[in-house]
Image (cartoon, rainbow, N blue to C red; front, side):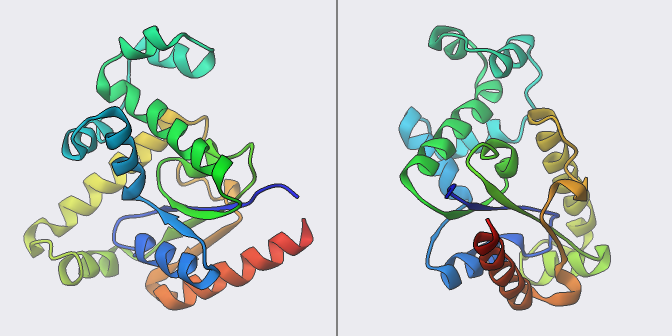
Length: 205
């Protein structure tokens, strides 16, 4: 049986990270989000903050595109700007973890694309804009006057990052096994639905 990994893409303010943690806890498997950044930073001997800043920049170099499409040597990769190398490095880390684990939950980082060859159960978490803004203010402690701007910028960054690094569209729901409106269902119910659907998915494969 192929390994199976739960990958979650989420709009800002939907609680995707918290839902991912709940799913991992219920299934008794590992959870990865920022942990990927920290593992990558340690592996590359780069400060996590520096890597996080580079992670937010969209790769645009021609060499980067060639790197993804071919088996360039390590010397070519090392000559790329850090912002262009982040996705390559993180993808390597994610695949190494996939080799070591039968299953885990991964939030963000084009997980369903990176792990496609291993077998994934892709989830997209979305929600009502007004309620997402409220969550940003109440749970994420974003200043009310900045909340909508932060939401728009974060969603845009995630969308561009995903679209640039994969051959897909971030909000194309056809590519996900399950799409959930967390502002209507709540984190706990979303997690329960994901767990139950994932278990059924595994039984049928």
